[in-house]
Length: 301
Image 1 (tube, helix red, strand yellow):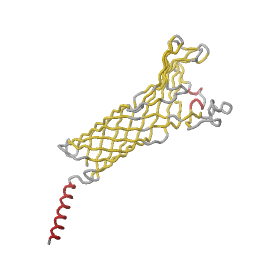
Image 2 (tube, one colour):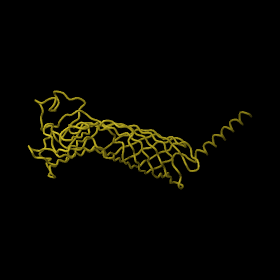
Image 3 (cartoon, helix red, strand yellow):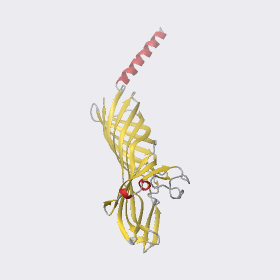
């Protein structure tokens, strides 16, 4: 008799638990949001067009200051849509598709009160970079329980860039012939190698209606992008298009982990350098680490 009562009690308890979980059983939800990120770690930028990541100032033909140019492309705006699947009251998964546009970052520059210093070959220039990218962000979500319409949660996942580039715009006033200065404008686009990043977030949703909620997330992300290739897409002299005057080596670059006497590089292989082929240069990388706040709406089915 006691055994039967125990089994009956167990069945009732199980049915009660099932009934409770039925309130929030398996379900789909969708999120639309926008974010702003600030950079969390600064590293030295890579060489730009043979120019090191330095900010130099000249006065009267003399160098008066020099400093490294550091930063991260982790500062900028992001918009995205996310599909989520909730297994139960506590556990779920998400897949986000995002578009990110970083703020402009100065990567190298020289300022001089003299247009050109023949003894050193110094001229005024400034190189500014910006990253735009689409990424996928799969994540595991842990819901912490709902109270008075608020439901906090945490999530961890990876970031997978699927398309994008680093665009570097350089403006200079440089010599094009003995005693002749010109305004030179160029745009280089650096394509990345495949990479993975890490993301973690703490957020909460607030129920506005039966299926609609507002949400806010504080998100940290960190990943590094290595260059694969570079292409010059614009090159003008005093506003006139001169891209066709550039050689293949000046327009196209393949990034390598190592360059030597067998590489198509004028520094390590001057005798064998072929300007009709893409130039080989050492691989460079940039950081895209940032801390961001995302605000948006969530629709649950």
